[in-house]
Every structure is written in structure tokens, then in C-alpha cells.
Length: 307
Image 1 (cartoon, helix red, strand yellow):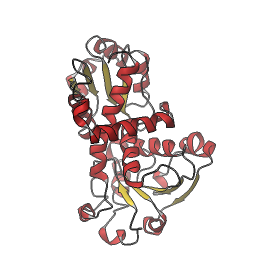
Image 2 (cartoon, rainbow, N blue to C red; image 1 turned 120 degrees about the horizontal axis):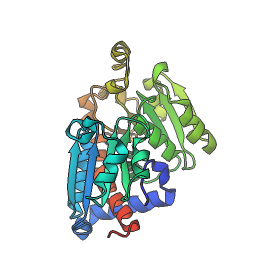
Image 3 (cartoon, rainbow, N blue to C red; image 1 turned 90 degrees about the horizontal axis):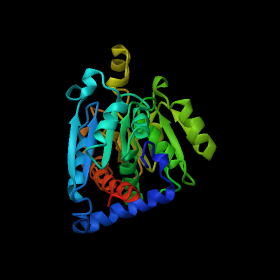
Image 4 (spheres, one colour; image 1 turned 30 degrees about the vertical axis):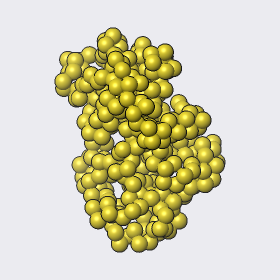
């Protein structure tokens, strides 16, 4: 039974297939309205989420399917000490596919190894967030018309930012990708991402602490928030949380065709004044995530012989 734990579980050909399907959904939504009729998706969210959970649920509803949701570990048997494996084995009796978010790295893999239906990782700790990466990739495809020969600046929390890790790994597979890694020393991209994804692909990357200096060379600026929930020390969080704030004034230094992306939620790392800039694409990403989750749900259910 195939599950998607990491975006690298999908080949570049499958990424093209999914983005093409998503674009067809955008153009012909009525053609997909009953594809998943009488099929059920379980959304198991052991940590808070707004966009990802609602996006999965909207995706399934728009495919004509049904949703059974668990929002928060406190409302599940996990609060009684039930293991992820036992939860998954139970839920598989009720549904055709599962989307799961969990605060612990590796929990999604444990779920997939114990499942009899496809499992989609909706975020596991600071590790991976493949469907956010699919939303990012569709946004890049729609806005830049290509995946190759792009210079991407990742700014903010590159250490704990699972969306950064996933997108960096995905883009490393395309020729001509260049990365500019903008972060404080304490939040630099982990060495394992460089070792496992960037270095084997020969991706050129530079590291800097200066956002304004990096802006003129970028095709894409991917902003991230400093994530309070990943810090053990409140003082470190408070010291780093406002290190990078993108303002309308700073945007004057960016190319006219650069796009600004952000996985959301934002706190204050992008000024609301930037929202009116035509280069701001972060709310488009939200909508694109629904289309890519629709495409992925259909793909996995078809491969499982369920539709």
C-alpha cells in the first residue's frame, strides 16, 4: 500500500503529473465533483493546524467524498496513551485514506508501516511536510512557468522549518537550481539536508545573514516564521523571532518578477503592507494546496484500486 511520507517519494515525473492534474482541476472543477463519491478521508491531527487540515477536508469534499476528523490529541485515545500504530490500525477500519499530522519526527512513517490504506504525511515535527511542498511547487509552476534554473532564497527558521527542508530537497532535483540560505547562525539549514539533498545533486548554495543584500538576485523569496513551538528556550525564541521582517521598503530592492512565498501562518515576518504587492503569492499558495491535495488523494486512491 503506497503512502506519501516525504516529497521525494514522488518522482519528478509524478510531480509533473500532479501539477498537470491540479491545473485541470482549476480549469474543469465539475469534472472532478464525484470522483471520490462514497470514499472517506480521515484527518488525524495530533497538533494544531488550520490551513492543512481544512485544505485536506475541502479537497475531499470537492471530490465528492466524506471526511472523518480528529483535531487534537486531547480528543483522541492518544490522551489515554494509545500508540500511533494502534490508532492507525483502528482508523483503517473506517476509511479509505488518511492524512496525519504529528509533532514527532518519524510518526508518519510508523503510521504508514501499520496502515492498510494510503497515509499522507501532513507534517511530522520538524521533518517533512510533503503536501505543503506540493502547494509550493504548483505555485512556482503557475507563477514562474518552470522548475529549472531558479534562484530561491529561504529566509528565517531554516533549522526547524520542515517546509524549507522539503522544498529544498524537491528543487534540488531540477537543473540550474541555486539556493540562498538566509538565517541567523542558530537557525541555519541542518547539515543533513545539505548532505542528503543538496550536495549529491550538486546544488549551488550560499549562506548569509543579510536579507536585503540577497534580494536582488532572487527569483523566489520563501519567508518562514520562527516557530515558537520548536524552541526549548523561550529566551532564544524571543531573541530571534523578529530577526527578519519583509517590508514594502525592502521589496523595492527585489526584482520586479520575484515572487514572495510563505507556508503560513505568519506572525510579523511579512508586513501586511506587502500583501498588496503583486509579487506576494502566499495566499495563492493556500488555494494551490487544495488543488494539489485533490490530485494526490485521487492518485493514491487510484493506485490502491479504490476509485
